Image 1 (tube, rainbow, N blue to C red):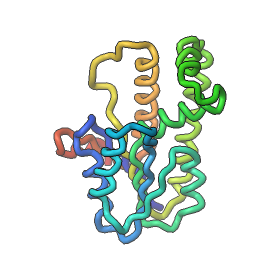
Image 2: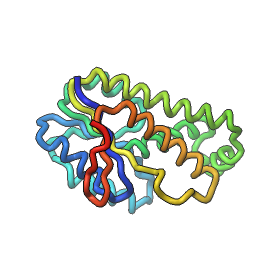
Image 3: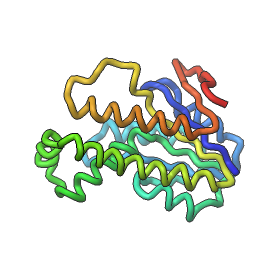
Image 4: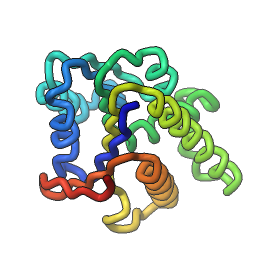
Length: 198
């Protein structure tokens, strides 16, 4: 059985570089890229391109943020898996739930979000957590390690608007779950990895 390894840290802390280094000697790696580049978002496009350049050309890249548990179950031949990142998976999965329900009118989606009741928020968070439960459950059966990169979201200022505060809390609870379920956890600060759990 492989291990589940969580790598967390702030923006530009070096967490992705450290996570990639953990798999540098593996002959067979699947990179699970969870970002979505919207048309016209040149800054995100550039970020993705930089990430692509820094990782091994021998790695297989799978771009998805949905049904990763199912994908892992059907593609268990790799010696290592790198999911980058949990934060983007959670927000992209959330917006996929919104567009499935309300279509691609983001003005309407913003209005619906602003009017969510606590029960509706709890229901959405439960769906996001269910997706993570499926990923972890499948990862436990893999022969290769699964490394998950996530953003540490609890060290900055409290967000100004209610949606950002709510989603900051969801990210935090996802991170708590991943930390609990992981065999190893590292916090990367200024490019230096600190072992939190092993």
